[in-house]
Amino acid sequence: VRQSLRQAGCSFEEIRYGSYRPEDYTAALHRCRCLLFLCEHESQGIAYQEAMSAGLPVLAWDPEKWLDPQRFKWDTPDVDASSVPFFDERCGERFKNAKAFPDKLGAFLEKLRSDQFDPRSYMLDNLTLAKSAEHYVQLLEETSRL
Image (spheres, rainbow, N blue to C red):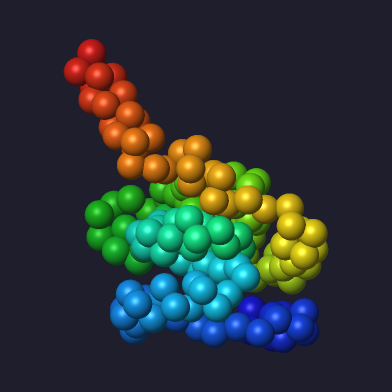
């Protein structure tokens, strides 16, 4: 991944979960044009959503499976999952594995340069407090009918 980024002429900094302060992440978002989100399953989704809320498109590794090694202990070895469950074409691009990364990076950068992403609009359409509250009430109503 680093080699592909360098070959594409990208500058980057790395932030690792558990090794930064929230204000460091916020400051990094202000310095960046986009986010490369490498998380094997959505457990730290707030990070990519915060980037999208700040208007930064996301290139996300999405293996489409839950890869937590603990899943075998719980007898759930094959579970469909997403690292970016709240996401559409306005938000950025996904890639499934390292082999797909260079091509997806190229496509992502091309769209980024031509301003084809609008992740903030996705956030406003789907994940505001009001929208989330509406969705929560819908789930409660659906559950109460069961």
